[in-house]
Amino acid sequence: METPAEKVAGRVFNVACGERHTLNETFRVLADLFQFKEAPVFGPPRTGDIQDSLADISAAREAFEYQPKVSFEEGLYRTVAWYRKQYAGR
Image 1 (cartoon, rainbow, N blue to C red):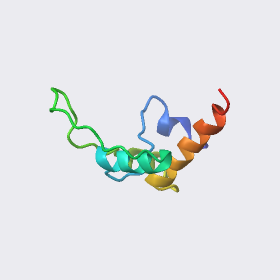
Image 2: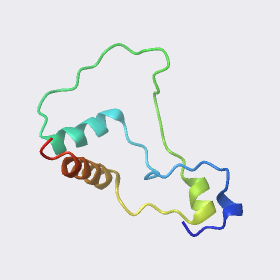
Image 3: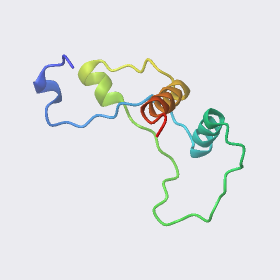
Image 4: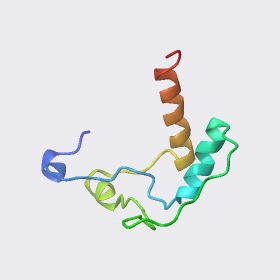
């Protein structure tokens, strides 16, 4: 990171795609990557369940001009590929 410390020191930033994705969508993408054919199992809502989530990347964009270069799906694909490589043969 090349941003001056006075712009970022002591701050926390979301580094994400800046888009809203549902748990069902995430399940679908991961199921495709793993060739998982089972349907999701839904249980009753639990206290504290998060209904909607979106990583706000505006602070990162402002502080160090963060701009996502990888889509949500591509990021999951790369993550799965990395884990497969790291743990191959174990």
